[in-house]
Image (tube, rainbow, N blue to C red):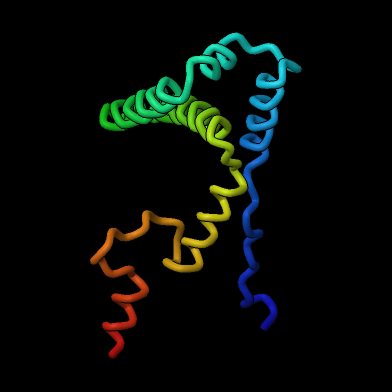
Length: 131
């Protein structure tokens, strides 16, 4: 019987690479690490950081439509890098983002986009279906 029990996933486990990226960005911000590209983005200001996130997200979309799997992976890394810099600028840690993913997992059964006002969640739909 013990084998049929599901293992509980570790909640709020931020991937090591993102934690390492956060730490590296903090080191660049404090001048303990040299990264001309990162410091240029950091000093460019919030609007430019947000623009870079949008650009990289668009590049992921374009490569996906083209069916270029490797390019999607590469552009996804660029997106995560730029998103992590944006989070850093706003004082947001990856652990906060992962905590929200955990909350949505608990609420919706997966870490999906929250429904807009007026939309039923899958949980609500399932509940009303069972009535």
